Amino acid sequence: MTKFTLTTLGAILAFLSTTNGFIIPSTIRGETALSMNKKKTKPRKSGGGGGGFAKKATAINIKTKKKAANPDFTYAGSIRPFPQSPTRIIDPDAVLSIPDYAIDGVPKKRGSAYEIEIKTPEEIEKMRKSGRCAREVLDIAGRLVKAGVTTDEIDAAVHAACVERGAYPSPLNYRNFPKSCCTSVNEVICHGIPDERPLEDGDIVNIDITVYLDGYHGDCSEMFCVGGKDAIDEKGRKLLQTTYDCWVKSMELVKPGVNYNVIGKTIEDYIKTEGFSTVRSFCGHGIGSVFHTAPNIFHYTVNQDLQEMQVGHVYTIEPMICEGFADPYMWQDDWTATTADGGRSAQFEHTLLVTEDGVEALTGKIETSPLQFWEEESAIRKGIWLGTSENARARAEELSNR
Image (tube, rainbow, N blue to C red; front, top):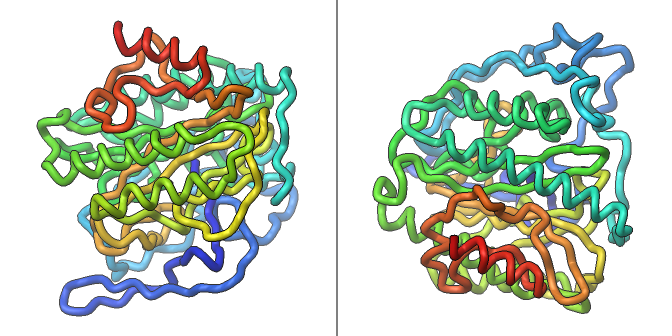
């Protein structure tokens, strides 16, 4: 799940106006402190609900607390919000642990904005387990992607799969997000809320899964094609392939001593030659016992030195690549971010561990994971990507040759 950011190098959409049928973005640029995932809200008084949790909050439905929708709201593309089912409830006794925001939606534990945590061997072991859990849940969700299935049905399966594994679905009630995963279809860049819209042949869907297992988060996302590769037009296939390849190309460079600025430059340089744009208003992030923490992982060129990678750093790389405008246009639910011009967007994400000999994907594919066409046809590295360490390379080759 992406982290929302404003920087002098990035831009956040301020408003849109329509001119001759085209939506033109207007942006504000300026120095602003980083904010976790979305705009900050005032602290809530104790004793309130918030939903997404059992016991005292069982009767609360998060979406009923939203302001009334404006019927004249202009959408950038063809996707529209559909009705949502009531927020699913979790019995805290059914999972190993719950995050501190589960009851009231307000994260209490905050990581450093600048100091990057070096994980201990014990923490890394827990993160391997949460990463494996996230991968299993993502694969379950991906198998459901087909025409006629709703994203709410996918969310129900994600919720059940998390609880079955003793994990809490991290998005649930995080700053009052009402569902257990994010499902972003076509022009939705990120943070799409699962609802009752049936998927259609030709849709491209990002499913973003984060689980909280035994005190640690594991975060990953992947693209899926409704109807398979043949149902997607040539430009859509190029968008998916380019997004995957720029992501892998950037991850291939991860190792101790490398400056974090190489990630964004690698991504932007690659996608610009293919005619695409990269989102600047959302970034990857450090992760561990806290959902979003340092470092911020920018998916665009930063013309200054950042910190250097060290063994034990754990973070996500999750570029969002767009056909046209990369500025986000926010829906009235305060979560769903679409492209400003209705063009499609694609994204991939892993939780990564910097090792002595490179990098490992803690959310990497497993024995039962499918091999997608962008992996088979990658111009960067064909087959499943699990990292650059010796163990990761050997395991990836084994899985790719099944």
